[in-house]
Image (cartoon, rainbow, N blue to C red; front, side):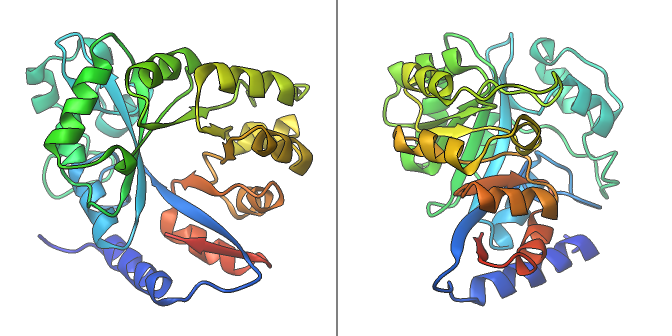
Length: 288
């Protein structure tokens, strides 16, 4: 398979990151490759993108899963994103196996060959035993947990290789009840950057997180900044027993903010760039 300039650049950054020794006196934060590595020649949320991530030193990827009406679990972000990257405007839940086989998600990335959406088992089959897949529930149902756990076991992975996340705390609560060994993370924490200024109520966030029995509270970087989550707010969430992370840290400004609230990890669309941003932020060191 031909190497793209994009994958070569990522490899160079990854090599530099992996060779660097952790520095004392700096806050260490993990950069998570959002939807794998993607760019020119590599489609997001594709087997090729996940394999490229692992090959280039990524230790933690993030991805998305829908429970289809036909009972299979499909890796795709949402309807809007599917239209953007493939030109196909389809109801995700109603996709058939023939639909999945015909849709090319490599159009936007201009891949050399057509790229098809992978199923859950395809994605988990790429995960090395020393790495982690952060798996967001996009559409849940009674059979989701059973299918997810079976695919994880078939891939030879342990529960520690997986972090299950969702914006829907009730889905996480049900999944955790059925499969308590998995770590779970609540995305959004009930905040929204689209609804104007929100009064931060950490007690309410903690109450909801405890009810759902999640391990991680993970608001979006944009909404956290707009709504004004402060270091004290993040400390209060940690003091209640939760890890505090951010998703969507896609700029140097957002990464600098992540340091102020001491987020332990974040998802990023520009994984290789995040290490360059970190070099300009005193007191921060990233790990892959």
